[in-house]
Image (cartoon, rainbow, N blue to C red; front, side, top):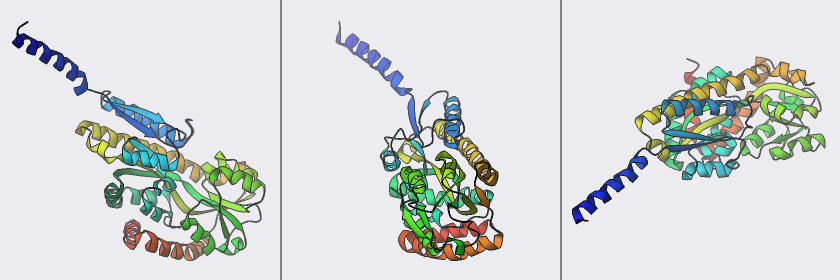
Amino acid sequence: MKLSRLLAVAAAAAACLAAPLAHAQKVLKYAHFQPAKDDQPKHVAALAFKEYVEKATNGSIKVEIYPAGQFGKDQPTMEGLKLGTLELAVAHDGAIATVYKPIGVLGIPFLFDSHEQAWRVYDSAWLKGFSDDMIKKTGIRMLSVADNGVRHFTNSLRPIQTPADMKGMKIRIQPSPVFKTMVEALGASPSAIPWAELPTALQQKVVDGQENGVTNILAASLYQYQKYATLDGHVYSVHAYMVNDRFYNGLTATERKAVDEGVAKATAIHRKMTADQDNNAKAILEKNGMQVYVPTAAQIGEFRKLAQPPVRQWAEAEIGKNYVDDLFKAIDATKK
């Protein structure tokens, strides 16, 4: 065979091999921490994202969902997102803090008066500035913020109507200086206990109470060991939708649009499911045998006056005054 023909055959073979590669399907691994059940906001949202993105890209992106922490716990998931071994994750603020400390500003207590106010902040220019900073520091892009439930106090001793009722109580907190500072400011004694050990700690009276959203109270059946709940709503806990920025920038314009729109659809579902549960907290917890107290606006003001200033001061010192100021400016803008 002549050299020219050999070269032609080789070129044709190379073209055949290259053609599939040019249209290779991109795999988007999507991790979250809730069970793969249809009553779990993260998972229902993930399924909606998968359906939308795969259809909108004509299959050029395949979405693989890893629910219930299958990809790894908090730090491994965030490190995977940072390194690019994971493309997208929906994680809570505690997990995010393992790679990006400024997320702690959202733990300052009594920031918001309603879900709608919180969402207006999350959807404002504040998020872009926050995400741009996160990209620079971690290589992770924050696309949206949804809800992880509004956090409330529960206990086994007595109704909490004002901060004075918390004096002397032992309250379980997640390992976090934000929550430690807040509980101490309200006159109680904080005790950091891992989530998995909390039901046993409550059952054995290691602590008198704890603080969590309705979703988590139900998930771990904490109502079995806690008689009283106070719907003070001290922290609007968050779940953020995050993507590896290198992967995101490597998508075509059509694919990026599909991912953005898919995240928007997932966020809307996620917010509604969680907010519906939060808004029905009193009925849900009473149905499970708890005595529920809803503080007045004046009483919430007492909690805010004691708890917010020391936590804000801690955040300014440990996270950065600029992060705190930017957040409060965004909150103030919602009141105009």
